[in-house]
Image (cartoon, rainbow, N blue to C red):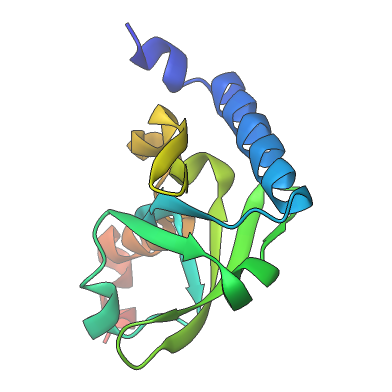
Amino acid sequence: MISNIIEQDSYKELINSQIKDIIDYLLENNEEFAITANIEAMEFTPELPKNIKSQLSKFSLYILANYTYTTIEINDKNIMSFEAGFGSENFGSKVQLPLHSIFQIIIDDAILYLNPLATVDKFNSNPKEKSLNVFKNNPKNKNLIN
């Protein structure tokens, strides 16, 4: 069964390595590209306004070109970041996402890389939201919320 493979941490590390190598290659060759990524694993700083975030689909397209392209970084924890503008008002935010949450890497409307791991909920939930939900679900904490 495929879930026996794609839900393993060792497979996640393999995917992280492949995506990092591909993005490094594209950056070394000054090739702009786009990604679709699972927003459930992303962090936005500052947080996107609700009216903008609510318009994003679970797998949203990000075109990494021009200024956004120049801000791409990948840290040693396999987290990619870039700065982007969102919505009609071009709201600026720094996006951070684990490499394994990238579903597609796209060049010129062609898919260069496809990653099924981006669809695995086990790896793509935002740890801050998960922690907050655990906190909220504890009845002893009800008096601390609102």
